[in-house]
Length: 299
Ligand code: NAD
Image (cartoon, rainbow, N blue to C red; front, side, top):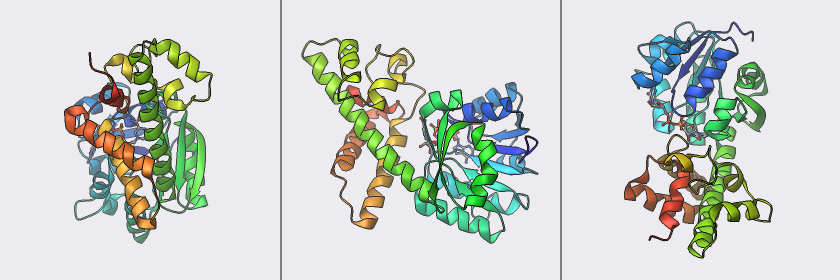
C-alpha cells in the first residue's frame, strides 16, 4: 500500500496520539477522531483532519486504525446499529491496536468478514516512549495476507512486527506479555521499597540490580522510584504512561484466559489483586509504576 492510503485513526490517548503523529510524519493523509476535544486538537494542530465523529472520520478511508481502552469500547465503535462497520468503504483494512479480549477481537473480525472487510488485531508493546519514538512492537493476529497489507503502516509506527497466529492470537500474546510486565513491575517496586526502607539509595540499588540477576525492563527502562530515571512517569508524579486501570484490565484478561483453559497463574492473580487494591484506593488514573506507593514504607 502506498503512502497515499487514506488513514482514519480513532482513539488519540497516551498511545494513539503519538502513533498518529508518526503516521503524519510518514506522509499518510490522516483523519482522526477522539471523544476528547483536547486530544483532537493536538492532532489537528499537527496537520491531521479532525472529524466530528467516528463515522465522519472513516469516510473514504483505505485503512481504519483504532486505539481504544478496552473490549467494550472497540465493540461499540464497530458493532451494533450505530457501529461504523456498516459504513467503512469496501476493500478497506481495519487494524485494531487496542488491548482487548481475544474473543472480542474474533467477534469484530468475524463481523468485518461478513461485510467483506479485512481486519487484524495488532496490540502493541513499548509504552508511550516507544509510541513517540516509532519503535513499538506490534503483535498481530489475522491472516498473513492482511498482515502484509498492514505492514507498511505498522512500520511507520513501530520497529518489530510479529505474527502470533489467527484472529485473537495477537491479543493472547499481548495478555501473556502484560501479565509478566505486571509481575515484573510489582516485584521491582517491592525490591526497591525494601532496599530504601533499609537505608539504600534507590538510584544506587537500581544501578546494582541493573547489572545483576534482577535486571528487567521495568527496572531499567521504566523505573518506578521517583527521581531515579528522569524520563519515567515516576519522575513526573506518575502521569502520562500506562494507567493502573488499564493494567488491571489486562490482568483481568489474563485471569479470563486462565479460567478458560484451567491454567494456573498464581503470580498473575496476586498482582491482579495488588492492582485492584491500588485502584480502589484512588490510584486508577495514575501510571502503573505507582504500585510502588502501595508497597513503600510510610514515614
Ligand atoms: P488512554 O486512556 O490514554 O486513551 C484512550 C483514548 O480513547 C482516550 O483519548 C479516549 O478519549 C478515547 N476514546 C474512548 N472511547 C472512544 C470512542 N468511542 N471514540 C473515540 N475515542 C474514544 O489509553 P492508552 O494508554 O492510549 O491505551 C490505549 C490502548 O493501548 C489500551 O487498550 C491499552 O491497554 C493499550 N496499551 C497502552 C500502553 C501504554 O503504555 N499506555 C502500552 C501498550 C498498550
